[in-house]
Length: 401
Image (cartoon, rainbow, N blue to C red):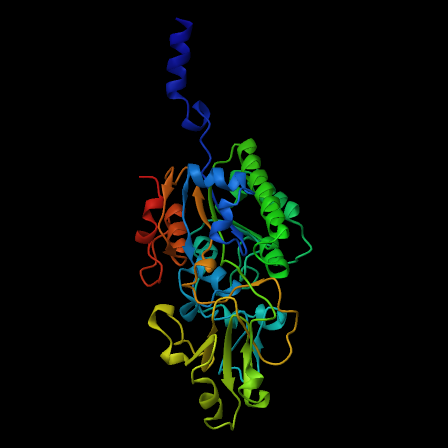
């Protein structure tokens, strides 16, 4: 009789008192800069490999140019660099003569003028009433459309990976009312090791193992807190070995005063200086060993690049492993680089999706990274952007049926 009375009482209790409501899953986007897709097969990343095996995974094709800022923005907007406005790590805009955007120029890199051509998912989430938090992601510290995430951190490479993990865990520890629905975490150490020592180095393998341990700490920390998480783990591009014996020197083709070398390396963005007539085009737009140059309007359609006014007039793409320079290099041409044609298999990037929203054991064929934004929107319950370059259909196999 006593048991029956207890059961009757429970039936009439408010749902929140009868049973604790399950917390809403948090979607966490983890960016591991420079994590080439095949790094996962090296045996140094057991936690990431386990997440891939139990979730959805596959190689991801970056957008051209295969550089950090353009691809991080492509991942969160669903628009390729030509349409998201971040067309390079360095770029110019005819509306701002004499001004150059670059990673090292905070006055420009933090100016919304450069970022407002596309909307990142943290802004879409905030507009929809979902709290967002970003632990380092290109663009996330900028007031895009006059907004920032509810929580954000100014990038500082001195903040260790452990500190970055602890910040995310602290966000997950919050009461549900102020816990983010969407969060990002960014790790740059694999990319740094790849540049300095090359993709096949012991230093890269050590960086892979270290980041893998940090990912494990995030997964374990969320589990200990009882907070379900949909993990989306991505890279912006791969990495290819370079050396000083494979260099194309623009100074041998055209005098330096005749050009503005907006960006050099695996690809070069060249703007002819004023008053140079056709000398620059005549020097660069002819056949060269280990390099192909074209006017931006004549680039192959598959690159989806060249229509944005911020793209320099002439784009030169080096043969994989070669480096284009204008004058002495700012640093020795050793180690590794990225920025090559996005058809280069060594530019392919990591993709893993694991959590309650995702399929188990799904192996995805190569897909374009702009589809990640559509996937994030779907998991967050946000409408798909019909105008975006990335489509949910390209990664729908990653979702739990």
